[in-house]
Image (cartoon, rainbow over all chains, first blue to last red; front, side):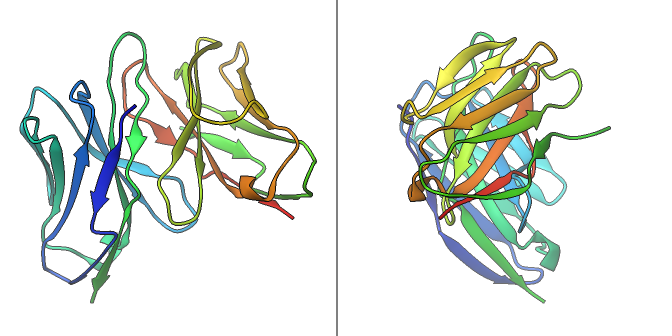
Length: 114
Length: 111
């Protein structure tokens, strides 16, 4: 099955700095890569996703890049704010037929210091 | 619009007991998935249902079972609880190939 590795496990930055979280996946057939943000006491929330036919996607301060050849993808957050502090999860999945089942990384705890 | 709702939010059970967790998906979402999240780790896939049929099963023992009802709500059952079953159980709903929307989860503590 799919295996997703995520680094770093903890990331501490100053407000206004950029943050980068990296993930690798094992199954070259995976074609859908969502990123989730989980705040304390809440379920994960989808913040951005990318499909394998796209190399990069941006949404305001958040961007995701995908390198299919190397089987890795990254989350970039610019101009970080204290409210960005949370645990971030990457996931990889094969979207086919009627459903897909994402495999999650272990998470990155992002701490943004004011 | 209501999001994914899960009940109960917290519960405490004794080893060997059985537990039933409930999930109501977003209106219009026909797919429901269950995940187990142990503290400090990512969610681990347990089951996925679509149109009341099981579409996927993760690497969990037969003590775990689930079902989906005609209104697309779902239940997760765990029998013969072990201490290691203590975790946050997340339910997510989705459109056919859309991103998941998670509920806030049920925190299960087995003592």
